[in-house]
Structures are given as C-alpha cells and as structure tokens.
Amino acid sequence: MAEAHRIILLAHGSSDARWCETFEKLAAPTVESVPGARVAYMELAEPSLERIVEEGVQEGVRHFRVVPLFLAAGRHLRKDVPAMIDALEQTHGVSIHLAPPIGENPQLGDAIRDVVEQELAK
Image 1: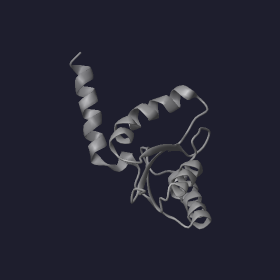
Image 2: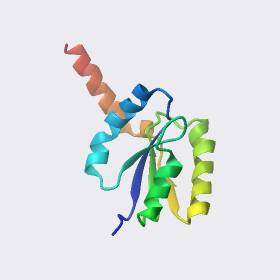
Image 3: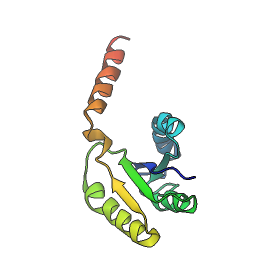
C-alpha cells in the first residue's frame, strides 16, 4: 500500500554534482526517517520534480507535499514551481501541496545560530 503523502524536498538544482551532493546530505536525515521522502530538483539536475511525481504515481501515490529547500520565495517559488505543479496535477490527476520555503521556518534560524556558536567555540 502506498503512503498517504509523498514528501518531496525540492532544491533548485545545478550542473555541479558537488552542489547537488550538499543538498542530498542535508536531505538524508529526512529521506532516511520519513517513508517515501525524496529529493528532486527544479532544473539542471536529476531527478526532476516531474520524474519523482511520475514515480510516485506509478507506486499509487495520489498526494504530494513539496517542501522547497530554498531560503526565500523568489520568482521560482512564486511563478515557476506553481506552474510546474499545476501541469503535473493536470497531467497525472494528483494533488500537490507547495509548502513555504524552508528558510521561512524559524527553526532554521535556530540551526544557523547553533552552527555559529559551534564555530565560535573552536
């Protein structure tokens, strides 16, 4: 039986594999602990958002939640990603919820503070 929602951690994407590896390491705790969670890229890297949604559909997933690994909502999150989501919903008959970018969560500010404090302690 497929999970009720598939979580997709969406990063911008880059042709530089090292850039993608950084996001995959950041996403690893979520991917390892949340059933069905996946990383996808908006552009320039694979797997694409479209590919991850298509794989989910093949596995019987009908509801997706996209969590953008972006610091703020710029043009991509205000226009490009919603247009991609609309097209995917129409093509596959699924529902896709776009969460706010991770940078809007106050917990990220706490994590940055913790990293700075660790750096200062060195």
